[in-house]
Image (tube, rainbow, N blue to C red; front, side, top):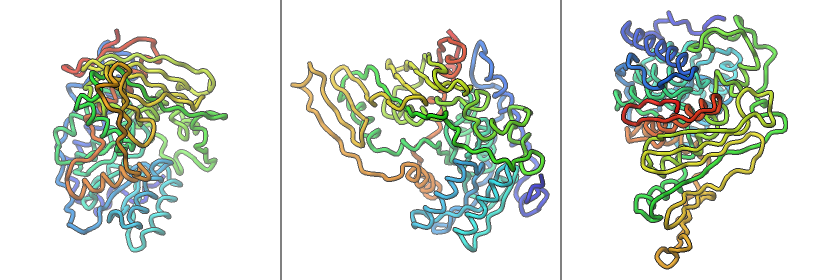
Length: 451
C-alpha cells in the first residue's frame, strides 16, 4: 500500500529533526518491550527503569482567535466519531477547530473520513497518513486525538508529547500497567503538554458534588462503594463492528503496522474489526466499559492508589468471545476503602451507583447527587439533593474541555494521574481474571505483585 503523503515530502518533515525522530523511535521500542513483558504474569509488575522519557518539542503557536488545528490518529468506529464530533463542534460555533490531518493503516477508513472533512470544512486542506510519525512531524498541528486500538495508545501518545502536541487519548489510557506508568512519567516530565483521557463521565457534575461532600466528611468514614457497567447482546458484544470484504493486507491495509508493538501476527479480519473480543489486544469489559464508571468514582472518592485487586467471572454466555462476558472486581485503596465493580455483556441490570459511609450514603444513579443519612444518624444529618445541570452529550463536553485547555492552557478534566491509578485496577483485574490470583500494588514503589 502506498502512503498517500510519503514521509520524504519536505512539507511533512519540516521541523522534525533527527533527534526527535530517534526519541520517538526509542519511545515506541520501549512500548513494545513493555507490552511483551506485561502479557505474562511477572513476579513483579511496574515501571521499566530503562524507559525513555522524551522532552517535548516546541508547541505550534496558537493565536487568540485562530483555529485549533488537530489530527485524528485512528479513524475507525471511535475515531470517525471524533472526526464528526469535532466538525460538529466547529459548525455550532462551540469552538474554533479544524481537522487538518487523518491517520490510519486502512485506506477505506481514511478515505471515508477525508470525504467527511472535505464536505464539512470547505477551504481547509486535510492531509492523510498511514504512519503517525509523519503526521506528528508537522509543525502546524496543535493537538491530536489518539483513537487507535489499545495496544497503540501509550506509544502514540508518548510520541505525540515528544512532538509537542496536546493529546486526547481514548480510554483505556494504555493496554497494560507498565505502559501507563511510563506515560505518567512522560507527562510529569512535560507539564506544558495538555493530555486528556477519553472518560467522558468525568464531565458529570454529580461526581464533583460527591467529591466535595466527602472532603467535608459529610457521610463520616467512607467505607465501601459500588458501580457497574452492564449491557446485553443476543449475538455477542462488539460483533456489530462489520467486516469489510474489500479489506486486503498489502493492498489497502498495512496489517503489520496495525500489529505494531505486539509483533507480527497472521491476518485475521475478525481480530482487526472486533479486537475488543481478544485478550492480546484488549482487556474487554474491564478496559473498554468499566473505566467509564471506575474513573469518576475514583475521582469522587479521592482514595489514593489501589493496593489490592481481585476479580472473578467467566465466559457464561458468549463462549465464542476470548475475553470474559462477566466480570466482578473487588478493590482496596490505600486510604482504607473498598470498591466493588460489576461488568457484563450478557445482562444489562447493573448495581446501584452508591458510596456508603459510616454516617450517611451518597447515591449517584441519577443526574443529581443525593445524600441520605444512615438510620442511626437521622437526627444529626439532613438528607439533601444537590442538583446537577444537564451537560448534554458528555463526550462532546469532554472534547470541548480539551479544546478549551489547548487554548487557555488551564488544566483539563480527565488527567493522566487518575488514569494511571485506574490502570492499576484494569491491568491487575485482568490478570486476576486469567490466572485466578489476587494482586497487591505498592504506591511507594509503583510495583504490583501476585499474592
